[in-house]
Amino acid sequence: MSRMGNYSIQMESVMRKILLVVILFISVADAKMVKKVERVMYYKYMFGHLHQNPSKYSTSLTTISCGHPLKVYSVKSGDEQPRVLFNKEWNFVKAGPYEGYIRDEQLSSKKPDCFQDKYPKFVDQFEMEISDMYNWGRLYDLYLYKRTRVR
Image (cartoon, rainbow, N blue to C red):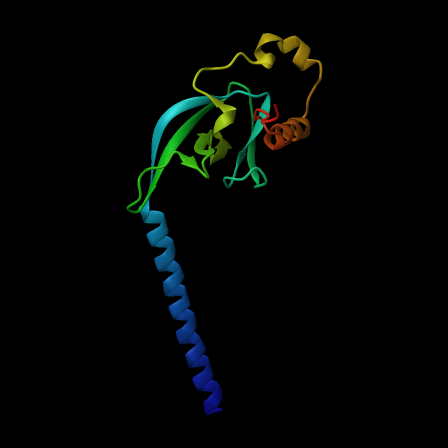
């Protein structure tokens, strides 16, 4: 019976140490990240997504449409220089209550001329639902907007 008592005391001690390390890690990681609004930019394609991580395959936080204003942040962690671009092509932005990542090529410094704004009656006839907007946004996310290198 004394062996069981020592084992539970050792487990309790280990659990306290793990909890302390986790709390310390969370507080240090959270305290060092500083965000600053750099500029406001606009989404320039018909539909798109704000992503949880800087990857076109990451989870979508929300669907955005053409002309939606986005606050672009610079982020500074610890001693490194403030960064606006992540993985050389993703901006950290805020859209409404959501903060996430969007590709730099999908943003414009001026409000774009959006199809939805030019022809609202035509667009309204489609009676698009949220799932339709989500699917069109995924299509725009996965489509590559690069020039060909073929001559």
